Length: 307
Image (cartoon, rainbow, N blue to C red; front, side, top):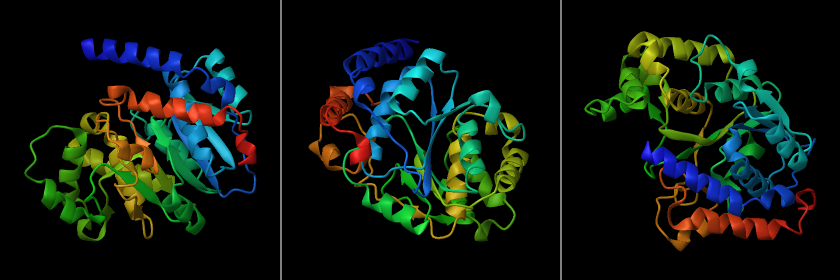
């Protein structure tokens, strides 16, 4: 309870101090681009999203920007449209697939897979900042190669059998651990791939997977760990990890260039290509705020369409 109250206060302070992003984030689409950008968003994170979007679009312009609206108000939608005039805002209840779990960002993954028939799709979390040119990502988009962020510098694509062997002795009850342990029992596990990635920033190759593949995987997992456990927060990330690894030549973004914020004051973050400011550490030491204000200052007299 106290954690949530502190988080709400810190979020309100951050939104107050970064409110200028609503006047200077001006993101345009590039119809000749080959990729779409998807984010699931709630009202409290609109400023964060505009910062994530504007920082990323300095380097890559999408042909389509999609927001899966987690019950954003009409006022919030107006803010989004003022900054991103051609944004597609999809109500979360309208993109849900009844064959998959509800909530926990499953609607985001559903939206991604549903758009792979006509473009490469990048999933961009609102709590990221693209601080320098993401050359690896640009290359992946150009080559149509899927990618994922990771939370461990040693993470790599492995077989389900290898994965299950690594996690078999773990005692945590989290859905990710239970799901990864179960994969060793999957049919043809030795020839099926998985990566312990992070769904906060991912790239999905055009036509890389189909919805039926996601549904089949979800049902297979439910048969091993149960629908209730599989529906817990974190299951969608496991499914995302599986889909990414299943695509040809999936690329693991190097952790040293795409880190998550650990709550320290290291200057190395500002030299990273993209940084993920995860919830537990996001507002520690005000580094996220400092880098966000620096970004706003750089945007004030710049039209992203001209970059």
